[in-house]
Length: 165
Image 1: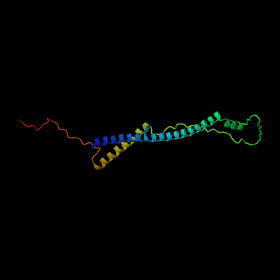
Image 2: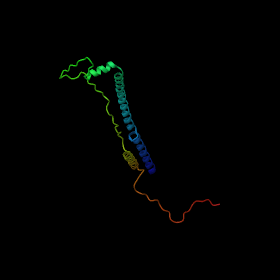
Image 3: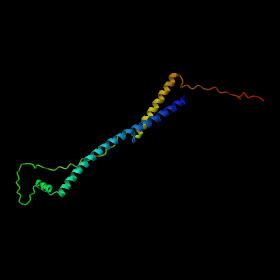
Image 4: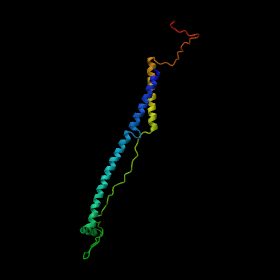
C-alpha cells in the first residue's frame, strides 16, 4: 500500500506539471491567446496603414498628372500664375493645412507566462500535498503505522516439507 501511494503521488505530480505547462507555460494556451490578440492588433493597424497608403497614392497620382489639382495646391501654398494677384490678410489661419497621418508605431509586447521552474515548484507542491493526504488517510484507517514490527527470526536449520520418495 505504501508503494502505491508514492506512485500515485508521482503520477499526480507529473499530471499537474503537464497541465500547468500546457495552460500557463511558455508555449501554453494563455501565451498563445496573448499572441493572437497581438496578431489581430497588427492586422488592424496594417489595414489602417494600407488605407492611408491608398489615399496618398491617389493624391500622388493626381498631383503628378492633373494640372488643375497642381494649380489648386499651388494657390494654397500662396503661389500665383501669370496675371493673377494675391491678397494676403494677416491674422487668418490658412483654410487647408494637410496633415498626413502615417499611423502609429506598434511594439511587440512580451507574453506573460509561468516560468518553467515555477511550474515545477507548483507541481511538486501539489504532489507532496497529495502524498501527505494519502498518508493521513492511511493512518486514520490504520493501514499505515510508524512502529516497526520486527519479524520473528528463525534460528537453526530450516526444515522444509519435502515429499520423500
